Image 1 (cartoon, helix red, strand yellow):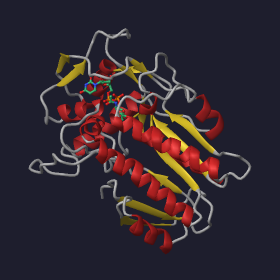
Image 2: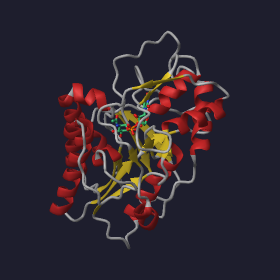
Image 3: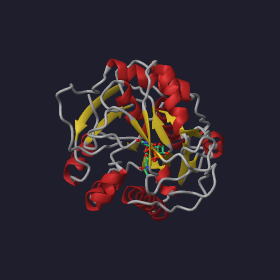
Image 4: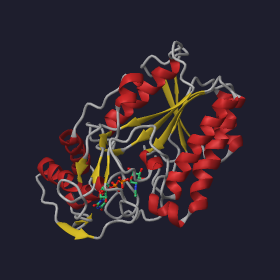
Length: 325
Ligand code: UD1
């Protein structure tokens, strides 16, 4: 089963409050831009809260097709919020991104840093955040948590669930993975003359298991009646910076494969160093990332080696899709 931006995973808790136990679940495929279809879903069941992952996320594609991105990420979010309000469901966890910060001059980057996204993708995340802040100002019954993801990587340790980007991967880890399984000849390092420990870009990679736990922590906060949450952003990262070369070395160790490297030009718009300040999430969500680069690469390789072509086959051509949360 693969989730796309048009799928809604409906999870009912029979108690009415989230207690960590999933009672039943149901997968419905609905385009969130289709307000009537969304309304029918909300009319069918009373929902306690929504986690909104339904966004497109490929930066390059957002530059090529900005209206496509604004339509999915902004019009879709507005529809969702309207339908939620109409059905008196006013608890939301929103998938935002560290892309809202652009390229901050310093790290750790805290939630108070200026919000200066570089590209349409990042701007859709910022605009959706602003919409959330405005609806809370207009109606204080809303409780909204904006989760700003840093660099999610890794896979479920079972090896059954992992990322399967369509076409050429935009992000480092899926690219490294495809080189390790022999689908691509080498990884191009986007610049090795940055002012970092080894000259390559530094980022805050976070295991998807930790990211998932961050959402559970956010839901708990939303359902904690003693907290006056309003509309609050939280960084989800480890607080540690790792360079491109460190990722490649860790992946070589995890996989036992040699990853051939080519040194290329800097990628326009890339930050030199970006890692999260995690204090606010630790204090207020009672959440802290547990896994390091070794576990991220171990689980990424477990998924890759069991599924070298992701959910497809060597013959499947998957060139025209958009990556989505
Ligand atoms: C990118 C997006 C960001 C998005 C995030 C989602 C850009 C500019 N930013 O972040 O908005 O929220 O993905 O995970 O696209 N690198 C290489 N070779 C490669 C690929 C990447 O050297 O083939 C380097 C990059 O220069 C960077 C690091 O690896 O230093 C991580 O890159 P990437 O995985 O694309 O993530 P971000 O750019 O941090």
